[in-house]
Image 1: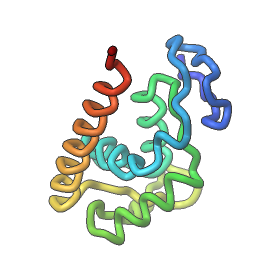
Image 2: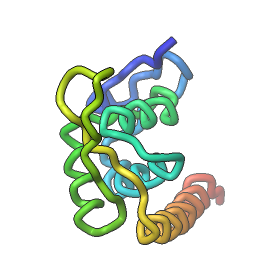
Image 3: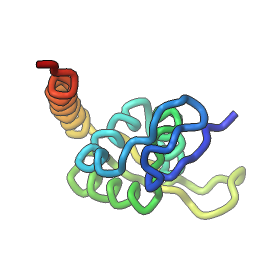
Image 4: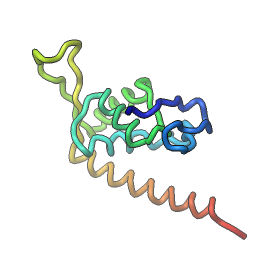
Length: 133
């Protein structure tokens, strides 16, 4: 059964599948590229597949629109963190060709750096949010 898709602009509404609150769009700023790199760590994918991975791993509490994903993919490719190539023509597929993205060695290093930054951020915010006087 597919996860329900709940737009990020409905902040704090409950996720239908997990009981988790939606994550505010502002909290995602600065972390989208790292999440995309992480999604490509499991293997190459085209844009729609990346969106599906995002929804699956986000357990319905996160949604990502194409209007956010594709500019991030272009930036990551321009910076050399991912490589894009057009898929070859296939008789089994109908529709336009898709661009397939994969993680580069430089991208793996950037992913490790972004994970370290995220872990530090999450630890510091966690300490502050759980602090008692």
